[in-house]
Image (cartoon, rainbow, N blue to C red; front, side):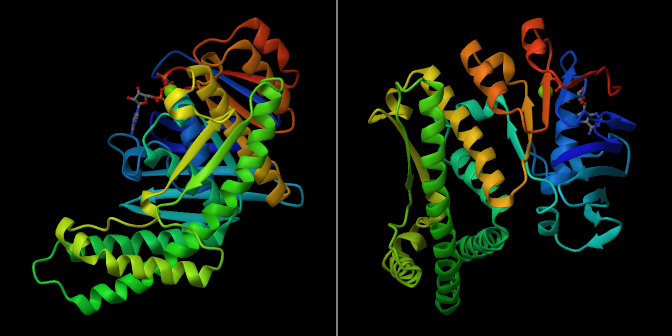
Length: 361
Ligand SMILES: Nc1ncnc2c1ncn2[C@@H]1O[C@H](COP(=O)(O)OP(=O)(O)OP(=O)(O)O)[C@@H](O)[C@H]1O
Ligand SMILES: [Mg+2]
């Protein structure tokens, strides 16, 4: 699939603009603070219904304006789609082919997207929350039922945590929340486990190929609630653990157990990458992970996702740049950069180059 064009109205520093993209490679060149990342953010919004930079979607509305609108035309194998996202009066409205949709989740099946920024290169070293966000973002795209389990889990968790902060806690209500939390939580754990097994086998292959066979990458799920094969068992186990741990939660006034504490572990040739890996190994791991993400979407959805590369080319050395370019010949690429060398440019045959200055393209 690819994005044929996008129309922006009052989106950050873009007042009113329409851009037609190339099917394959799109390169956006501009100085700092001109609107390169803003443009990628607008594409991302039409795919996931949110920003990759902020949870406050009102921030995307241009200063001193009261609404924003983004339209994207997406070309797929079998049919084309027009997506429109409007944000106005703290409401987000979505239209697909002119028809209003109530739920953001209905957006998810229209445009598959993978984003790679310098931030992502730190995924191995960063705090666990970043790794959980990675898993959740991907799983929400490939598995709509994960999106609902995960959203329900988060909502129950919020309720439970605010109940735990009250002075006179209704223990019957706490028990109801425990039942719900273990139900949604076990579904989240189950799906994460399967996804990580898949990501492990694919990124291990890719990593092996980037390092010409010298490094064996392994990725393990490290769930906060120990996993059992049978979902019913897992749900029961989670519920019992919540019960056993209740006094602790009451004392701490928050939920101390559950998949909101999960993590990932990375090993290269049996050595923990987070603690002992070189910076280069950590970056290659991140790259392998991203490329695996693309492959999984392709396998699950039978469509290539589009890839947004925000300022990431210059962060990679020649070997990795070349590997990246070579392995992405089938996907539509959006690359932002402040400058680009002739030699990289020449590697892309089918490309369109855009210059961005103060919200003009
Ligand atoms: N809501 C908004 N309304 C208007 N302008 C905004 C809004 N939010 C951000 N901007 C402006 O957008 C510009 C930043 O754009 P962006 O982050 O896309 O830059 P960039 O080209 O990616 O730069 P860099 O190379 O530094 O990453 C800033 O000038 C900022 O003031
Ligand atoms: Mg930027």
